[in-house]
Image (tube, rainbow, N blue to C red; front, side, top):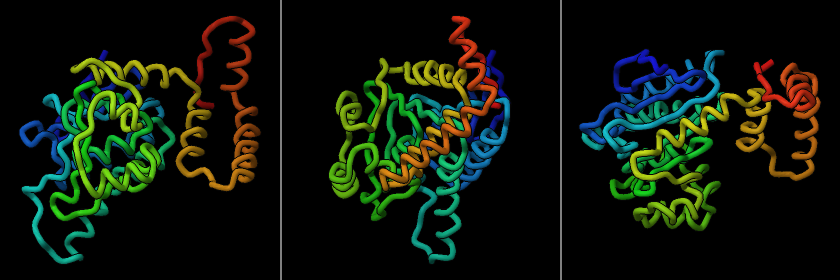
Length: 262
C-alpha cells in the first residue's frame, strides 16, 4: 500500500521496498529551482541510507518529467553566486551515482535540458512512447550539467552526444529507444507503471550483487585486465554472503530466493 510521507516540491511515497520521488512543480513543468535541487538531493541521500529502501524511482507531476532548469530564477551573476547553485545540482547526481541502490526514471512528456540530464543519469530510463528528450542547454548559452557529459555519451555514443549538445533537437519514441536515451518504452501515461514493474523486480533481487554491478558499470576501470581483477574481487566477496547461500539453496529447492542484502 502506497503511503505519502512528504509534501513539498518533491513528493515521496513508498511502495514496498521501492521509494518513488515525484518532482512536484507542475505549473512550471517541474523545472528545477534551487529548492528542488536541495530537497531532491536530500531525499535521495536519505533513501540510499535507508535499509528499508532497495530501489528508487524518479518521476514528475502533471504529465511531464522535467522541463529543465527554471529559467525564471536565472540571471547573469558572478561565479561566487553561481557555484553554490551549480554544486547543488551536481549533489543530486552524486547521490544517485555514489549510492548502492538502482535508480529508475519514469519519463512522461518533456525531459529537456537538466531534465534530460537527470533522467539519463539514472540506471534505467522507462519512457512513454510520446516522451520527448532534448539537450537544450545551448538555447540559453549554457553547456550542460547534472552529469550529462558522462551519461549522454555513455548511452548514445560520443558522436551523438556531441550533436545533441551542440545542435539540440527533440528526440522521442522509437528513436529515443534506438539511441539509448530510453531503455524501455511504454504506452503514453504508463511510464510510471512500467518503471515500478522493473523496480519491484530489482527490489526482489540481491542488493549486494546489484550494488556491485552498478559500481562496476559506473566507475569500472577502462583497462580490460583491471576489469578482470575487479570481477574477481566482487565474486570473492559475494560468494561469502548470506544472499549467495540463499540463492543456491533456493535453486536446489526450486523456489524463489529471498535476498536480505547480507
